[in-house]
Length: 214
Image (cartoon, rainbow, N blue to C red; front, top):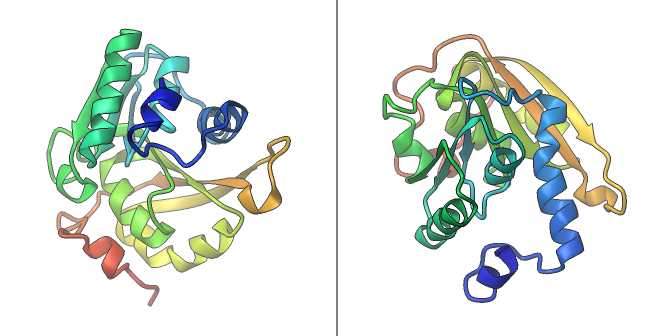
């Protein structure tokens, strides 16, 4: 389905089936290494900026009992996600067309998820502001980053703290046939405090003016 849709709309730059399996599907399900996913209807997951469904849609397919929300702002990608949901008959899969800056201030989503995931959306200072507001206290964010994840974490200390994050851990994922520069490192952030009500900031400010260390 992904390859066929990708011929008409730009869902992913990767077209080779083997590369899609390695760099999208296996990479997505590797979230389970950083944070064991509970295959239960009480376990709620949200994928911020889901795109073509990585990692959230893959997680839902592998762990079908979990309650997954896919948040995506681009209409053509939302249409693809809804098509896949219908074709596969996926239950407890909520697809929301919205920006994170808006949805995070909705009481249906704010601080309502056990696990928040995101892949390839933004640098970590911005991503912390866009993801942690969705996370329950004592829940976790698991964010896909690259080989410079440790540097991004150091640049994000203020943002993580302001959003209520506490403990931060790195989980490098080794992938056969993958190039070192494409190595995935998961950044796992545990949330210990409520996010202040004025975050995330609106109108693209988290990306335009990311919170800086003081």
